Amino acid sequence: MTYESLNNTQKKRYNRHIILDGFGLDGQLKLLNAKVLIVGAGGLGSPMAMYLAAAGVGTIGIVDGDVVSLSNLQRQIIHATKDVNQPKVASATCRMQDINPDVKVIPYETFLTEQNALEIIQEYDYVLDGTDNFSPKYLINDACVMLKKPFSMGGISRYTGQLMTHIPGSACYRCLFPEPPALGNVETCAVTGVLGSIAGICGTLLSTECIKYFIGGDLLTNTLLTFDAITMNFCRFNFKQNNSCAMCGVHPTITELKEYAFKPCTKKNKN
Image (cartoon, rainbow, N blue to C red; front, side):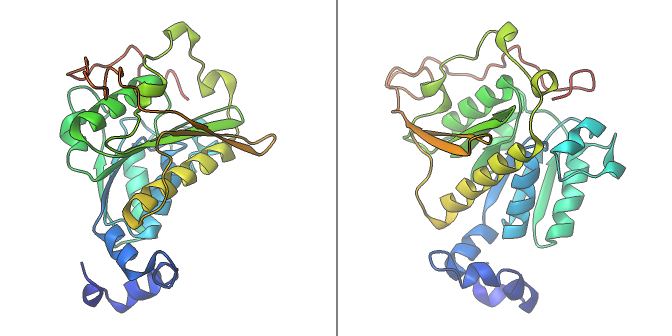
C-alpha cells in the first residue's frame, strides 16, 4: 500500500499519525502492510486488539477458543453484555471491524496448541501474548523462537503487571524463566482477583511495543518491565540472553513444541 492508494477517509483517519514526528506517512504505511497475531481475546487481548485496529494494522489474527462470560466483562472491554456465551473471537472481530473497517481480521476459534502453533504463527510478522496461563506462554515463546518471529509477552495479577519483548538475537522468555512453576504454585485471577484497569495498562503497553517494532523505537528487549498500580511504580529489570538457554542458547535442547500441564480457561475455570 502506498500514499496514493489511500483514500480521503483513510488520510483523515490516520492524520494524527501521519503528522506525528517520528511516525509519519512511512510509519502508517508500515502498519497498514503489517500482519500481527494476538493470542487471547481477554483482558490483555482486548486493548491490544482495539488499539491495533484503530492504529491501522493491516491484518490482525486473533486466537481464542473460549466464550464470553459475565465475569469477563469487568476487564475484557472488547466484549459487551450482549456477547455473553458467544465466542470471544467473534465478538472481538465484530468490535475491531466496527472500529476500523480497513483492517482485515482473521479469527481462530481455537486455543493455541502444540499441533497448530507453528502453522498459525508462521503467517504473521509479530506476535502478542494476551494469555493468562503458563502453557500458551511457553508455547508462544518456543514457537516464535523456532520461527524467528518477534513477540511481546505480558501478564497481570491483583494490582500488578509485567511485560517483555523478544526479537531474534535477544533474550527469550526461557532465559528469564527456564521452566514453568509447579502446577500447585500457580494462582489465577479467578482465585486472587485482578483490578480490571490493570489489563488496560498492560495491554496498551504491549500494543505500543508492537507498533514501535514496525515504525522504530527502543523495545523492551532483554528487559522485564513491571508495574504496581497501588504505588504507581514502574521498574525495569535488565537481563541477558542465556547462552545455556534450552530454547535460544548456543546449543538448544528444545527442538519441538511441548504443551505443559496448564490448561486454558474453560467455563469451569474462569480467569
